[in-house]
Structures are given as C-alpha cells and as structure tokens.
Image (tube, rainbow, N blue to C red; front, side, top):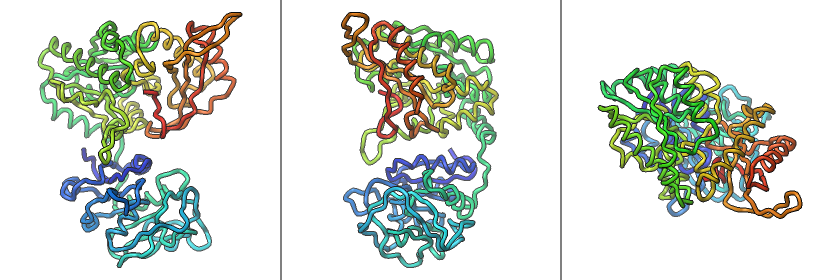
Length: 515
C-alpha cells in the first residue's frame, strides 16, 4: 500500500532493520521493508521518495552474501546505506572494502567533517558525537565521486557522501538509541535528501483505509474474527467505519481464554459498541483438535485452521459473505518472511498458510502498522482507552502458553496462575509499565516440600517484558518483593504447582511468547 510519500527499506538481514522503519515512521513519514532482492522494475513501480540499504550479518565478500541490483544506485533516487548497506554501496560504486585491522563494536566517537547533508545542524571539529558501531570490515578505497563526511578512531570513512548524486553512507547505526545523533541523521535524510513531508498520520491512514475497504468490498458482506484484543478490536472498528452493517463480528470461545475473559469481551462489545456480534462456544472442538499435540507450530496451525472452519460455517449461515477481516500487524508479516532461504521466526496463526485453504478473501487493514501505531489508530477511531491499552494476548490463547499437551487440567492450572500475575501487576501499578506480563506452564515437574510431605508438581514461569513494537524486547526489572508475592500466591493458591521461575531472556535471541 502506498500512502503519500514512502521510504523503501531494503533488508539485508539486520536485527535492527525494523528499528529503521520505526524511526522513520516517528517522523510521520510512511515506509516499508522489502527484501534486498527486490527488482529495479518493482522499485520503479513503488516510486519511493528514498531508499535505505539496511545493515546485515555478512561481509560483502562472503560467499552467498546478499547483493542488491547495483542498477538501484543509478535510479536518481536518494539512497542511504547503513553499515553493510554502506559497504555494499561503496563496493558496487567501484570502491574497496577490506577486513578492518581493528573492528568496531559498540560505542564509538564520530568526528563530523561537514555540516550539510546528513549532518546538517550538527557540530563539527573538536566536538565528537557518540554513535553505535557493529562491523568487522571497513571502507579502504573511496570510489570516484565520493568523499568522507565523518571519521572515527578506526574508520577513516565512517560516513561518506557523493558529490553529485543523492547517495550517502554511514558505517554506524543511526536507528539505535545509543547513536545520540541518529534521529538527526535519519531526519536529514528523509526531509533533506528525499524532500518528504510529515503528513503520514493516523487520520490520513483512516481516510485511505476506509476508501480502500469500500472499494474492495462493494456491496458484499464481511465477517471479522473478534477476539477482544487490541488488534481485532481496531480492525473491527475501522472496517465498521468503512462499511457499517455489512460487517458481522464473530467471537469464538476456543476454550483457551483467560478466566472471565470471554464474558467480559462479549459484554463490552454488546453494551458499548454498535457492532453486530455472534458468539460461538467451540471449547470442546478446539480441545479435541489439540489432544496430544505438543509441537507449538502444530498447535498454531490446528487452532488457526479450526478458526477458519468455524468462520466459514458461520459465514454460510449469514449468506453472501465474501471477506474475512483480521488483525494482522506488520511484525506478523516481517517475522513470517523467509530471508535467504531460512525458516521464518514463527508461523503466526493469522498468516500460517491459512489463506490457501480459505474460501473467503482476507482483509488486513492493519498489516502495515506496528503495535503502538495500532493503539494510536484505535484512539483516533474513538475506542476507549481501557480497551486500547490492554496487554497483547496471542490469538491462539493459552494454548501456546502451555508447553506440551493442552488439556482441561493444565488449562485450569495456568488460568489460576495467570489471574494472580495480572492481579498483582495491576495492584502494584506495574500493569501499564510493561509491554506484557503473563504466566507459562512448563512441561516439567520438580520435587518440592509442602508441610511435611514431598511433592512432585508443575513449574510456572513468569514472563514480563518491555517493548515498543514487539520486534525487540527486554525482560522487565520487576521489584523482587512483587515477584516474591506472585510466587508465594501461585504456590499457595494453585494446586499442582510447587515452583515459580522468572524469565530474564531478551528478544532476540528469545521470543516474547514461549512457543
């Protein structure tokens, strides 16, 4: 989808590519991430205002290293190369990249040589600026037309620009917070090089999406998979804005929800919204589908296929239904893309190969948005703050927070533990401070002592993370006393549990969920 002016990011496999997109969107300029292999013809069709070549884990000389078409550099489109992208730009322009005698990883000091271009408004000379480096190669020979615009202790060409073409390159990562001038660099590229305007807002997004949905749907009927989460709620709201009563929302109780959640969701949508909502209790069906299934990907697919089956059955009852609206987000899309032939990070239930078996066409109005943008959109659409700021909850529900077999007994254990986690997080004012907080039932049992007797019971893991968009996350530094209260309550109040652990893994290398 093209919304006004667009910056195209070509991804070479960097873990921070998504951060580039976030930083650009924060300037109210729309951007998209596409594979490095995107053809010149496709790029011409997209007509981007500018192109960013991302970093990547390879050396430009590695066998099989990702190389974009060098003809991209001759499109007369402003291009910014970052780290690997900078080295590739220089190599494809006729320069030379070599293994650095001294590598640069982490903080470095950048001396700016010129105050125009990428560094407009920044100080030169003796003032050095903190940047973040992550490279073992460096530019040794500058191609014709290029000149240095910044140096560091071990990179004589830490930043370069072309004298006559709209090409610039930086060895550091402007997208990370440790680069203190990063926002300035990206802003100068987006507005100075590319001439973009800060006009991509949620208001403009709503106008564009409403028009697109109306054009796509026409007079046909749409059903929406309503879960009560932020994504599905905002999806329903924007589709309803576009087509009104042509939309019917279907809430499927898959038996994998948290305690009291189904009742609360139905009460909210029936009492406080104008949406048409059909409720289907499919607990027995889903538990049967998950019987003896332990592989997390199989769980996701079984649950996803089960939803589609039920949606199609309900659509048949309504009649003339042609479309299914669902809340796929940009992280779902990005994490499901196969890079260089490798397996995707996960197979989201929203994507997971489901469209191939569906008889309904899919409408995904949020697929270009990150989570915080969805929340902003929801507020713009008039949804209440308590619904918008609800912590993310996975579509497959507790089924993917139970490691191993899913059954009624294990669901009961996890539900009771989860209630305690959320209760204490809210009670101590931490619920809104973190991105997500939840309990996970592990597939192991451990020895414990309760009273005078030996026990051999289940383990609950607590997972709390800080994030902005779910692409990266760090474990939350919850006060020990709160963790102690949570642990004590779970062990005392949840029969079958004798041990509680706290997950201190970041994403990457871990994921937020445990599946």
